[in-house]
Amino acid sequence: MDRIESLSVLVPVYNSERTIGRLVHVVAETLEPEFSRLQVVLVNDGSGDGSHEVCLGIYAKYPDMVRYVKLAKNFGEHNAVMCGLRHVDCDCEAIIDDDFQNPPEEILKLVAELRIKLLNPDGVELRTFDFGPVGKLLK
Image (cartoon, rainbow, N blue to C red; front, side, top):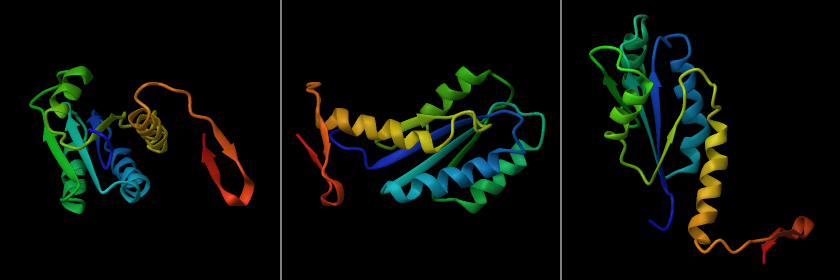
């Protein structure tokens, strides 16, 4: 892989009927314009609230972007993540919590760092010089 054009965002879901809809909306609004393809993988880890119904509604709203997996019972966050990783298929994956503990905007910073590493695999320090309105030059 020499570039990151598509992104999968994996969200383990547990009793988050109140937050997951807003989270997916913010993920879509924030990240979709930045990638040729955005995928959101929701893994419901045996929630006891209305998360399943909310996730089905999210899938209906974003059928081309969302994959939804409902586990038969609560297996724990680690296992939900491992299950979700089997369903991602983009250039890069990010895993975030279902409660905005990790703001979706932070994913852009992580991907930017990864893109720099891909452009500069030998770790040679790149310096940025700001030339005001003319722009920035990498040297």
